[in-house]
Image 1 (cartoon, rainbow, N blue to C red):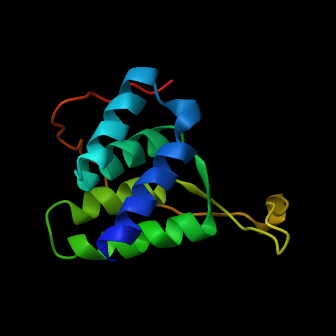
Image 2 (image 1 turned 60 degrees about the horizontal axis):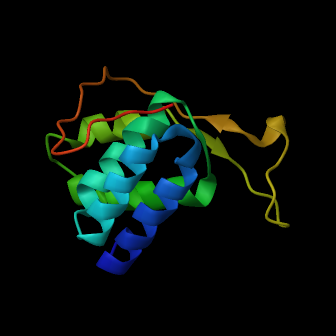
Image 3 (image 1 turned 60 degrees about the vertical axis):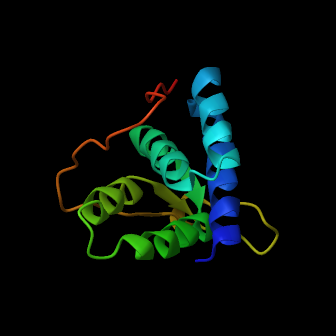
Length: 126
């Protein structure tokens, strides 16, 4: 994933997490993205989405998995995989809407999660 795609992913995640973010955290996340600190922004937003077992479009989860490729073999890979596994994946229809409940599948995690460390803002989800 190139840097422009990573920026796009960060903004898409923050927008998807809007219902779960406090105004202060959303402001910090926008500042992190604007400053180019994309890893912190994506990891923090992902933590919030996972805590709410949020539903994300299949294409966005696929982008997250591509981004996760940059962590392959790192200490954080298992934690990030666990967070992604807590999301509900929506299957989009050809019209851009979401399919019925039969089209949804649930990702599962097989490892216990450990908290991510943060610089700056703490996670405050609604």
